[in-house]
Length: 249
Image 1 (cartoon, rainbow, N blue to C red):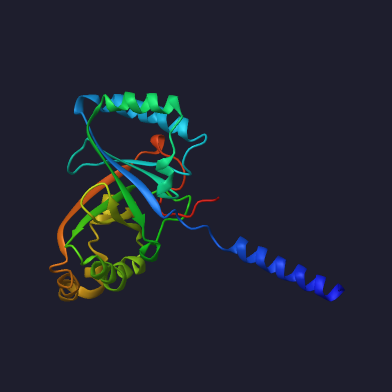
Image 2 (cartoon, rainbow, N blue to C red):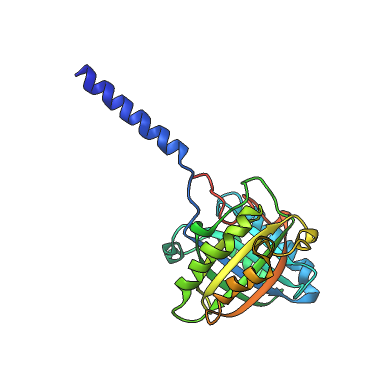
């Protein structure tokens, strides 16, 4: 009996140790909302978003990342990302009247808004360390020919993103699943615009001809691609900056 009890204690201790060493996984979904704000109402919109962040930080999502396109493109575009543990979350009726009031106020300043359910792709990710903050995020939204999603995933995993990993680029990736035209979204974290002067890690690793060969694999698969540069807004955000960074449960 003593030996059996001792073995049971050892097994339980080993199980607890393994559990403690296994980092929590990112949520399977992220809600990404892309907002076009009326140019004359940007300050008012930011003010309401600051109130929303302060309110939901108390008992809301584990993290919230708000960023705004910077220098190039639409300067009045904001991107808001929050984790979603499962889609059943949206079946629950929101009873937070204060939050509803804040959201209604923010809509006064919005020109258009679109929300996506993004399925996370941990197999492709190289997320930032939890406490590291990027200066900029390069966002790549890619549209894929119907039925060729897996081909695109395979090329990114085998031929493209490994060169970013070797070059020390942190990034997270997702599949645009609900909310609009399907596709993929990639977010690359950089310190500043000077980092972008270094060029593509794929070109640096393979040379121009090798990079063209990789790009050729995407011919007929990618139907369109957009690149945005966004600046994270710390006063509107909280939690880890990398959208796929593990969060403590």
